Length: 195
Image 1 (cartoon, rainbow, N blue to C red):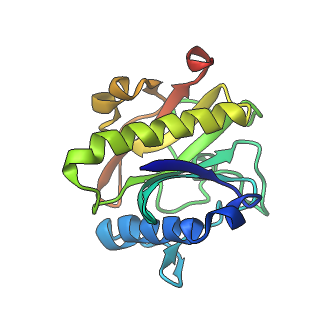
Image 2 (image 1 turned 90 degrees about the vertical axis):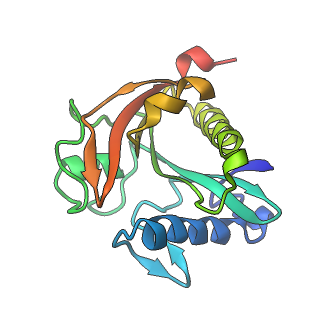
């Protein structure tokens, strides 16, 4: 099992991994969760999949087991910035505007984590290990990008596994239902994990 952080600058070094990540996202979000999201060529994508973002993949022998997208809170593309902020501004119909307790930040040291998933095909006996790989790679990559905090929209069961993965996290907004699944915005503090 490996973890890799992909960017537009390095995706050519990783064969089909980038496309396989988007295929796994489609399977997770469109097929399994039945979310109404854009798709093409068997891949799920949205307006935040730009050169500003990074994509963390946990994979084994070409199969993507889990993934996360990281986007700087300073990102801009037309009318869009990053998913949590745009939802708060009312630009996204699928996500409630009251997802945060405070105003969405715009700062170079804060990155957003979104599109978090562990593939439904990932065997139960390795899911905890896959989750740990995913979180460790996300934290490492975010720190390398200059982040001291990550604002994430993640499944609301995060308190059950956060401490096991070494995550210093706290709620940034209320629990909410998004297309039948419970989610919550969470602050992830990276400053204590710096080496």
